[in-house]
Image 1 (spheres, rainbow, N blue to C red):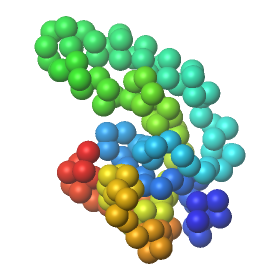
Image 2 (tube, helix red, strand yellow; image 1 turned 90 degrees about the vertical axis):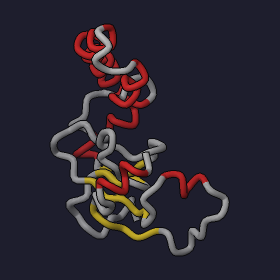
Image 3 (cartoon, rainbow, N blue to C red; image 1 turned 135 degrees about the horizontal axis):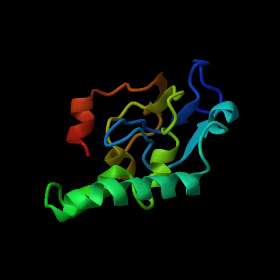
Length: 134
């Protein structure tokens, strides 16, 4: 369903698309139009830019105790930069196939995958549900 989406405006598709805490599809497996992917910075360059931004602008807030050090991960540094990468361009038009609103469901062995997939433009799930499942 992601490789041949039923809506041609979709240019990045994953299992579950979420805007919380940044535009991404957990697990970092996806399909995307080449024309969209070519607009993105190379993944390593993107990670470096995110980490440079955090170091210059956010770490001083940690030192002043305005935010907690653990909150820095929520900004998409380290391995999380690679999950954030796909959603980093303003031309993003995402879609997903998960009818479930939690990535935790997909980690469970007690799931019925025969009825769980249905293509839809993102975001199909309310922000409130996605925040509750973070």
